[in-house]
Picture (tube, rainbow, N blue to C red):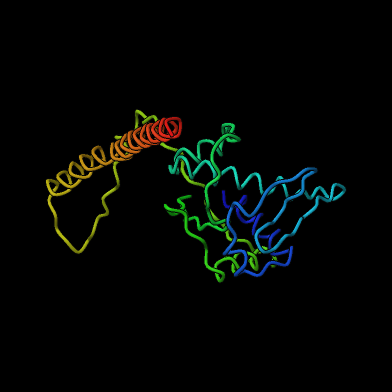
Length: 224
């Protein structure tokens, strides 16, 4: 996700747009054209053409990021976006309405984008572009996959209890501490699965709500 966005920021900066102009760009200002080109409309009226020998096709670079923006606009669920990104299984969105949305959208470390979409600041865009230009792009860890299975030996791992020569403690103290650790460890191993289940339910309800809203909008349009 970061790579798709940063690639667009780089081609826009290379085209001569200032960071303030990039921050002000709307998704409706850009359009992928024939032969891998991209058209920047609005007040810019600029076309970036492909360089086939170099393999540079700005239209494809923009389409990859536009796909994420359009999907997230309709299904604002980070889990759904990441699932489709990992498998490259985005649906055909050619018939979806084109809504206004900033091109430069901030992404936090977990892949979340603001809702409603908000534009990055010119300073934030400059920091990312300069980092790539100097060959030191931000290093970001991958978002962990959801836990679906729990190992049978999860409960067997018990933290060791350090011994201290300065205190005289009976064996009952250590046994009680180990038992308390084992109980807490057993209970806490179920927490990630509970979070996953709640998140799945939220995603399902969100997708259902968006479908109902779309059906209502389409029905209203037909009556009008």
